[in-house]
Length: 353
Image 1 (cartoon, rainbow, N blue to C red):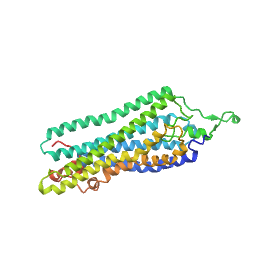
Image 2 (cartoon, rainbow, N blue to C red):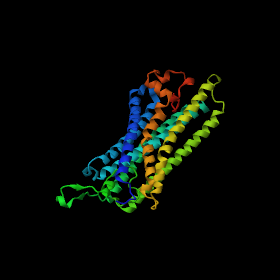
Image 3 (cartoon, helix red, strand yellow):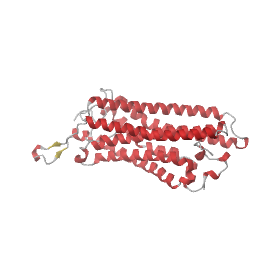
Image 4 (cartoon, rainbow, N blue to C red):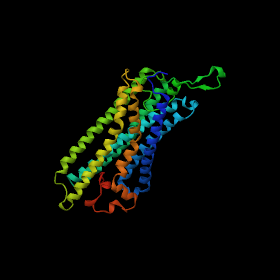
């Protein structure tokens, strides 16, 4: 086997890491989906963004788990590369939706708080903004799905399926799995992006996919970084201004800081989890760097990407005391509280009275 490639034991370790960390993400995101559905009346306006975020994270983790499980199955199953070729991009599609939802959620939350901070008479503006956010939510799901359909169509037309090698001494009745074939039929995220002999699509298409992944991920991380910095500047600007009634000034300022902090953390999760993946894709264009040299980076990338769903669910749900209070039944209904003392769980989104 080519010593530049990852060996069987390394792929096995990566697969175990994926499954272990993804199981935590599955539990975290699935719990948010279940709680959001069961407590939808108490969560009120939060149902739509929380359910969509939790669902996108759960589907991404579930698909990545399913494709990773392929590495532990027989060669007959693994040799059908369509399962991996279609499964991994579908998981990435849901991760992309999660990125976009995170950015939209943070912006919508901050926009709602800023609207209340600037003025109490922006009812029409809030309603209009809410309608625009609803349209954007639909686009967030539709655009990545269309991109996936285009990918599936193009890769199907350029694919040459891998064929398992047969043992000549056994009259072709059994399959021989040599190290090269095990590597070629292994399904690990970004394992085959570095132009190896296993490529089952033409070189131009393979390079186009790598370029698209690089541009998409780089764009997401840049946007997340910009939004993260803008949230910090906005917090500093409005935190010093007099925008609340005197009797509730301290309470509202604390809630403002908590709201912006949560929004920043939501944006920070994609930056933390996917920066190693961006670095891995970037280095795949350098032919002098082998996969063996990148194995530590594969380990870091596998761990952080797999924890994306868990970290997301902690940040936008379980970390917030308001969400936990609703889960424990300590708040009968958030709307029963006086407007000036609403919790961030309701205030984090613009709503029309």
